Image 1 (cartoon, rainbow, N blue to C red):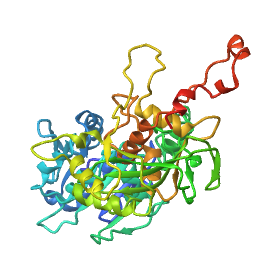
Image 2: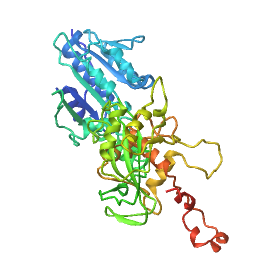
Image 3: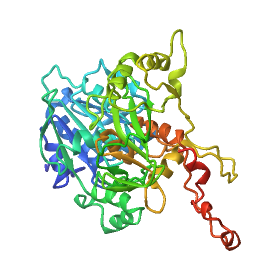
Image 4: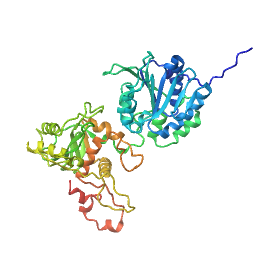
Length: 486
């Protein structure tokens, strides 16, 4: 009697997908572009793992939201069902004929990762890792990778450029080896990780029609991110107007320029403090022609161990931060004022953070902080009011400037600002606002500074009658009243 012929249900495609399922490295990030077969690669990797270790192969696959699991589970039905695996709907668990198990779960909040700390898995998968704003919950999941049977454990993640977690994902996986395919040894843990890039051209099941649809899907940045996996192309950036024009070489700030400071508070998360000078007349500094009234950020203090890479806050007290500010202002002329996150002025059974901070400053004869204007966006009432601009509008207007000349600059030594501000995203629910789940500490600090010195980028439309009687002093692009505040 002839043996039954078994058809192949799923086979890894040659190239990156095969490299994924055979990679022995502990931590693998797979992806970089749309259409590269990321979900199939993760599901297929567990098939191989389950075949090798049977009942000792215990995996869990995470997504950020419950609704995002639906398509992943449906794809798993097409692959695992014909293999004789049984899916338990209530527990969202696949049980393989040889006893291996793969569970699906979601982490909508960072705190949800705590619920898994007592679990043991031989494989942890995180789909679309860039949807996680911080690495905290993801790193906690790695603590669940352990096996009493000696099974080699591993972490596998997939993702594309963009999203609230773009910065930390790029920092962890892309920056150490931008081209991928190189094993990186973590300096703290000694564990190995690798980035395996995939492109739509690596997926034989997606033809030229799909590629053309990607090309027609949006801006040049979006196409580069989706099609080429370019991690330096930021689609949906909130401050898409940011450019190298806003970054200048350091110079000796003239002593007669007005100076002030702005700050966004943080302890467990980073704080951000900026020192600013106001250009008094049209002058050339740092290789640029700076217009009168422009703001120059000549120093910043970002409260984490590595401002150029981000991370958790320094957990300093208000007194320690006050001492740090005093040390940095020791050689500065006296500042005109300081603006600080207004939430720090709230009292809760004792002196507020702002009071403790200001006490440290005033004891040394330094300018105290006042509450910053915390208006993020203007109310949408359908009226075209040329009243005060919101904080983000103020910041955007200054970044754009006038006639190609910005009205806000920062020294190239302000690495936290340069690293975080250009890649911040729109809030998916409130597009006019910034996504607060991203690393927005420096941006908030900038917003407080810009709101403290209002500037308006309004340019009046042509009016032949009005222009015929315009006085020379009126020719200020609609910013005359605002310039008086600079």
